[in-house]
Amino acid sequence: MTKKLKFSKLILAFIAFVVGMCSIIYELLISTISSYLMGDSIRQFSIIIGIYLASMGIGSFFSRWISKKVVSSFIIIELLLGFVGALSVPLCYFYYSYSDAEGYQFFVLLLTAIIGSLTGFEIPLLTRIMEGDFSLKDNISNVLTFDYLGALLATLLFPFLLVPFVGLFKSSLIFGLINIGMGVFSIILLKDELLKEKRFKKIISFTALIIGSVILGMLWKANSLMQFWNDSIFRYPIIHTENSPYQNITVTSHPEEFRLYLNGAIQFSSRDEYRYHEALVHIPLSQLDSVKKILVLGGGEGLAAREILKYTELQKLTIVDIDPAISRISKSLPLFKELNDNALVHPKVKVVHDDAFQFLTHTTERYDAIVLDLPDPTSEAIARLYSTVFFNMVLQRLEKDGVAVTQATSPELTKNAFWCINETIKESGFGYTYPYRVNVPSFGNWGFIMAKGNPFLKDYLRSDIQYKFLEDDILDQIFYFPKDIRVKDIDVNQLDAPILLEYYLDHWRSLQGQAR
Image (cartoon, rainbow, N blue to C red; front, side, top):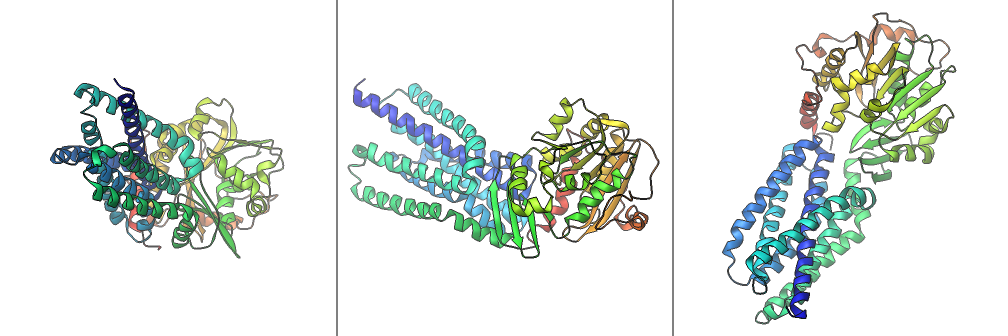
């Protein structure tokens, strides 16, 4: 084998490696942005992966129709794939702003099919380009080996580098440029095969320059484009936004309030969050004779902790939140620090960054109360934290007369989900559940479920605690649910059958696009 042939083999293998990496990155980007925007990550990843693989098969099938100009066809495919891949996330963001749930889902699947079909053309064409230098078995082995190695690198880069440090928007643009770069590189590497296509070479080179310039311009203006998109989604100006390995975090501000959003869903408004957190914390803690050891699952912004620290006899408060970015923001942004009274740096508070499920699995401590301040069940990962298995783990970590409480979504808007959580807690082993609700203007009528092992329910609050919202008289109202929002014959949420996710998303999908 000549040095030139060895070099050609190496370069073509490198191209196979890079195009394999880019294709998987596009698929991961689209799946992730769709799970962010639509919830139900298993469904989004499953459908998108299925459409992607099927489309690859279609692309591979139709590649047989390219019998001439294989090199030029491969270059065109690379440029098209790079262009569509680069715009995949920007198009998803902006289409979501002007579409309903069904329209967005159709668009995502169409985009996936286009990328999958173009990807399906790559390997057969690249194999045929190399057929003059290597045997068929070596060709297929070399191309597929490096293509799969590129896919492996993509799956490692995506969660550990791209999502936390680059972001989805910029990642799609960067890898689109890389894909286009492979097309340009192929023009240079395979110039001998393009000698008879001088006109094509000029046109395609100019096209690559234009496409690359457009993408570079979008990359340069990425922050401005994201700001424009955010302004179309969020009500108030954004003062902080980032993608952590777990979620998109956005903080908006207005002279009268600021808000925290996770994956586009509001978590609290500073204007009325005290209603939510007082109800979440003080209703269950008022059932205890003494508040000494408390566990909060979620609540990394420190607002539940602020309320719990009002109990002077408290000895230890442990907060378990999976996302370090939430507690970092809550400790550093002045608006958060003022709102949570610097609760996260209080000497009685210990913040643990861990998955709540894993934490309960390994801890041996027992608590007087466990407060579940978790996000709504928009994905399987969160829905498992409302399962019978999880609630039973909560029960095992309570003292004999301990109490647990969880936020439980809206009993009006997502009433099936609310009562599903109630039935699941009962099924998990708690002797008694006490559903209650309060009006939080930012959320509407919001539900909570308190669970105990005994039926005794105190009908008064602690007199030594200062409340902005709660008072004894309210206890006569919050435990009553009108019959039009009571639901019977509801299924229990199991770890391996997360029916709660379906209950919740049924209504969530119906609201998609109505607030914009």
